[in-house]
Length: 121
Image (tube, rainbow, N blue to C red; front, side, top):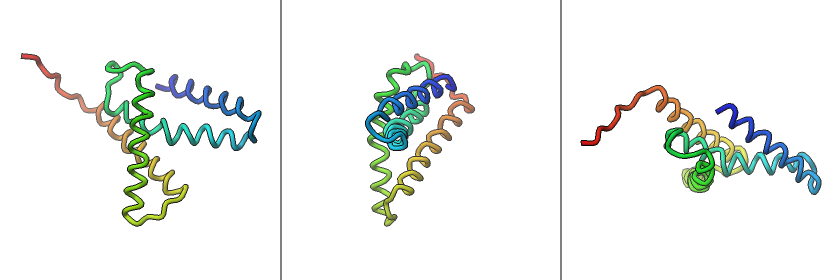
């Protein structure tokens, strides 16, 4: 897992540096890392919560991660709005962080709790 995170981090840094030719470097890092944090990170952690490592390949996780993030992040922000919270950058950051922490808790529970194997009869 640490190897995968390292590769993702290096590729995000390289991509940020490559687009910093057209925009200021701070803006490039904000756009690239912010886009990853909103569009990929919550869904990527959710795929580890819903699927075992052996069930799907790492390259199959990214389309699922994008789809999970694209559905859960707007639904969470809309729910917070309907509850009367003001929507700004900090509430969106907190809600995405909450989604990631919730999914990490599910991953931890799945790894520590051994589920019984189903027998085909």
